[in-house]
Amino acid sequence: MSEDERQSIERFRAEVIEPFAAIRTDLVRMGAASFVAEVTDRATPERDPQPAVYRTLRQALEMIAGGDAELAAMWFAAQVLVLAGYAPVVDRCVVCGRAVGRSATFSFALGGSLCAADRPRDPEAVPASAVALAAISFLREASPKALARVSFERPQRAEVESLLRRYVEYRLEVRLRSPLVIEQLGRLR
Image (cartoon, rainbow, N blue to C red):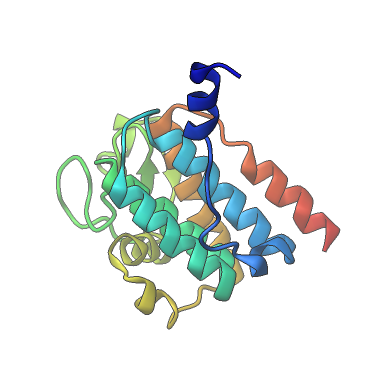
């Protein structure tokens, strides 16, 4: 073996510090972990260290292994958006700054909620409930400890997950594959 080959092999040697065994034995946890891993892969440039993203990834994996896996994945998506400079504006209209009220829409292109008056600025904006926008605001600011004390009802959870996933896809300019895997794993349960 040449010196170059040996150095190449050495570069890829890794040690497992935390195996997250609980994730490997549960389909929901596995799906959530695949989502956060894919988002991390897409959000971090190759050979560019991103310590804040990786600290957040570790926190998310710990929450996925020991708590509400789906909620942890949503939290991670919100955190990565913040770290990447794409924090969604959900507490006011992203265009005019006025309160959005109950008839809000969410613009992936403009980066947040739109009031009724500014809705025409983005014909592709989607409806967003006040509850979903408040949940995204919470996830954007919440610590892992605070996350352990909250739960979302199934309809709100689905809406928040969809908004965050679609916004991540828009900002990262990618179609994530893990949501399809999660959907298929859900059918197996």
